[in-house]
Amino acid sequence: MRLITVLNRCTKFKRFVFEESRFDEHGRIMVSLRPRKNSRAACSGCGQLSPTYDTATEARLFEFVPLWGFPVFLLYRMRRVACKSCSRVVVEKVPWSTGKHHLTDIYRCFLAQWAKKLSWAEVARSFRTSWDKVYHSVQYVVEYGIAHRRLDQVTALGVDEIQYRKGHHFLTLVYQIDTHRRRLLWLGEKRTKKTLDGGFTELEQEHQRQQEAAGVEEPASFLDQIAFICTDIWKAYLNVIGQRLPAAVHILDRFHIMQHFSKALDKVRAEEVRRLKAEGKDPVLSKSRWCFLKRKENHTDTQALKLSELLTMNLRTVKAYLLTEDFQRFWNYTHAAWAEKFLKRWCFRTMRSKIEPMKDIAKMLRRHQELILNWFRAQKQFNNGIVEGLNLKWNLTVRKAFGFRTFNALQMAFPSAW
Ligand SMILES: [Zn+2]
Image (cartoon, rainbow, N blue to C red; front, top):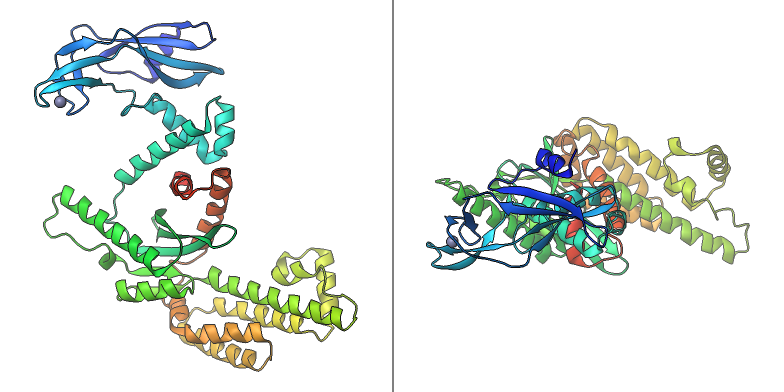
């Protein structure tokens, strides 16, 4: 079977035919293409079929999906057309490549597919291409995806902030978290009021444009259709959401709340280790960090043993741990009223614990009580580990885009994982 037969089977270009395939002196497979007889070329400006003005003497190379490790190139002599509607001579538009790209669209989709599974550097190595080409392929697919997405079905949003580098390098992410569709909609640099405000404005504008293009007579507002929004207790976000989504049910996310507990526990433990050392006491708490950060049911045997030993000692860390464990019960309630009672009792006890980091949590929970209780009001529907799951996915993506940590690369790496 000839290679041309295979190509004809997997990809056919209207108005063009595969001519012949051969190896060149560098061991690359060259497949030449030519226009079908009497076919006219399309203007790259307006797409109209027009008479040929002239044909390039040299063929242009377009990189195709490699076969059995051999690079494959399409060879084609580009024509120019005298386009009446553009009233000038324009280079033709070819169906296998968009714009001035030297990679075929098929190859770019192919690389972008692999970039979901491997790091971009690994993709480049595996297919003997450059990191840059992988980057541009992902960019192409992402831009196509953004240009073709619809925003009119979005009714639930999740907002998350993520540190993507050491120091103050944060990103703000806006997800759609509807049960039928979960995906990233927008991401922006920093985690300020301005960031999120700008993100909302961009989504609003995009939605308007889509409705205009679809000829909707009375365009609706994007933010007005949002019924639920789920976030962390981050003041900048809370303010923006209060202003721009006053009617949406605002839910404080469970995953984020429990993250605050982990941080507080870490603080209490670190302080106590320091104190015990200063008092010359046995460093009983060293290497116990995981006992306290893990949920009980996830403990290994050694960790369980160590924990039961620690529990017999009257330590602040242990008290803080028990308070945290106790708080987990909060999430088991099904009615907001009962959850509220529990929350009040828990805060009352914690405020008398004399453990500052835990008292800070109690204060925070009291301050945002209404938003936290919304979690029960929304019947857990929009929250069940959704944002948590998105978080894990994000970390994976950051690792994959590793080695090129600019904002632009991240911006593209992210949606490509969806
Ligand atoms: Zn034209």
